[in-house]
Image 1 (tube, protein in one colour):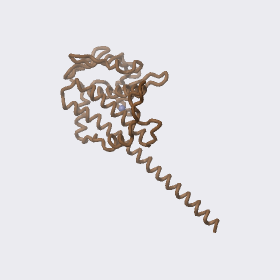
Image 2: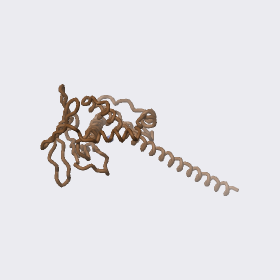
Image 3: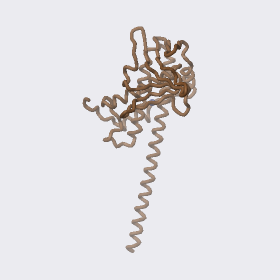
Image 4: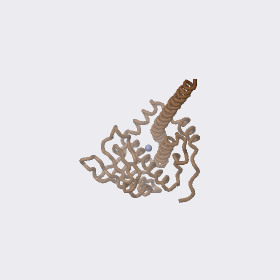
Length: 254
Ligand SMILES: [Zn+2]
């Protein structure tokens, strides 16, 4: 491990990336983008154990296990992005002990996907709730892979986490969540870029990921507002209490 990167300034991060982040996508535009992203790929070949998706510039090859019939879940064994010039296996850039699973049916309870980093004996896990048959779900998968790579960098100190023990700013935890989401979405957008020439698809992907980030930013700000209000209430109660004690002491002296 090299030297620790410098501490991220929470206040600056908060102002630039949470409060003043320009992520808002108009509802109508988002609905159009989402509809296009959820339309199944036009050119897709499925054979037992694999799916090949043809993109404008290259292909995605997904290698699967068979579905576990009772759970409706299958494991992905490889995910290969191919252009004429090069071939990238995403399983070569995530930790070897990460499992990636896909659930056949979407799950409204969970978001489209989630990730759990490895801990102790437990392997890291990426879980996608819905078939990988449209651009949206590929973006979701790439976003989760972005998280796993970021977790790895945090562990080796290559990336600086915002909520450091030295940082007592109350916004630090929330800012760290936002930092993680931004990094994961930036990874997804960059990973997709070489395979498409369509500016529409690029804009759709950006709209989808930005609107999710915008939601996270709003939630974070609401949490901090609540914390601030609670703190103010506690302080007001303390002041009242102190005043009462003083008044009572005054009465005794009289
Ligand atoms: Zn995420």
